[in-house]
Length: 109
Length: 112
Image (cartoon, rainbow over all chains, first blue to last red; front, side, top):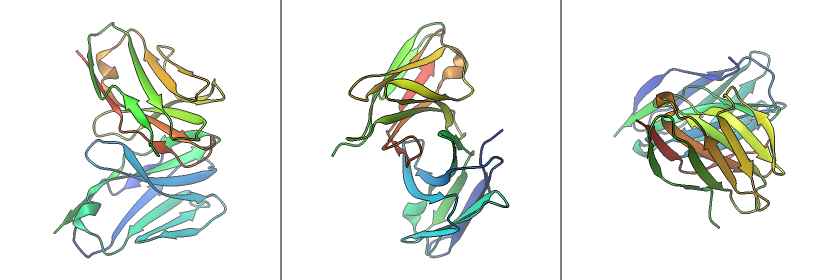
């Protein structure tokens, strides 16, 4: 499969803690994107990192990309209860997008 | 500015029937992609339309077909529905085929 795979499958933390999710993929990519999904609704785009970038920040989000290891990580700092959702990485390989099965994050108040 | 819209929101069909789902992209976006998301799984790429042509296709049978209109809106058609086609169908639009995808709220299809 060319899909990205997220790790862990589920993560439960206390409000205020940091959450780290990892994504591994198998093929070369143009870019990698992270999305959030609340309760089976539409996906919300979080951040896009290009294959020639190593790190990107957006607010409380920090994404890293290691193309030699074919992996990426998403760090959410100072988590809030509202961050509770499923998080997916999506790889873009010549306009074909592949999602992993996601990480379910539960942030307890 | 309206985001990506999809219709209908929910749909119940019987096995063997045909279904058409619709998507209007975000204003200014000319690329539309369709995804199938089964319960508890990540979205699976069905196909992508750009300039009214299917540009990329995932691993889906020919029962899944689509169309893009001159105004960039798109339809997803599924023929001979199977129980396994029950899923959330998501549409995403972007400024170009490699760009950030903006997703609609999805259409929940149930096949009985």
